[in-house]
Length: 225
Ligand SMILES: O=C(CO)[C@H](O)[C@H](O)COP(=O)(O)O
Image 1: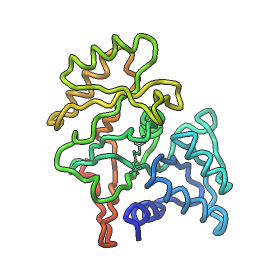
Image 2: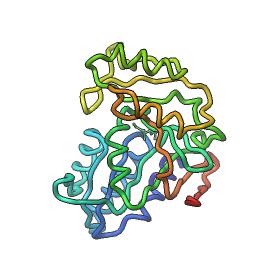
Image 3: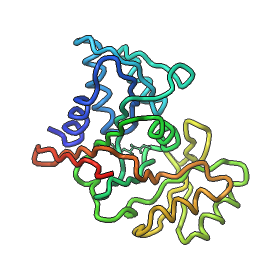
């Protein structure tokens, strides 16, 4: 089986009827949403969900998953999302799909945070995957200069030769910091720059990382936090 499917479906073991569930974004979370949707439609799984992107919301609705928003609930019991990189401390780089802002809001609202990934995503040190940063369009050139001054090379993301615009109508800069030895320091510095809405560093949040291996096995790593 595709390792993303293996991990994405395994994570649904954490979802039980009555729960409020955060739905991630990307090609691994896709399999999670499909499996949740199948259980809702065919096995009577009864949940309320919030999605981290318009695309994931559309997919969940197709299956008849009950979607709510943060005016209706004050926490999520479990969220299952993908990642672009994860290290042994279960710190992450996310945002490859451009959904990092909604993903981080959902991650902070959740009591239990499950990450699903294939084995290529598990790395000794974060940073080979350029760090996505969501930037407000107003004054983006100045924000670009401030981010560059932190020692990275940012590139404004494009898709199909057009500027990529997030679900929140912002830009994404993909920033090459090289390997990030101190992610907490980088996160703190980015948070101090006006115009930076959020970065793809998700630190000290993950409870469980489920890795699908190419040989069809699973590796499940629980947080020591
Ligand atoms: O952060 C993300 C979107 O912003 C995704 O979670 C991440 O890109 C997932 O990767 P994949 O498609 O390989 O599961």
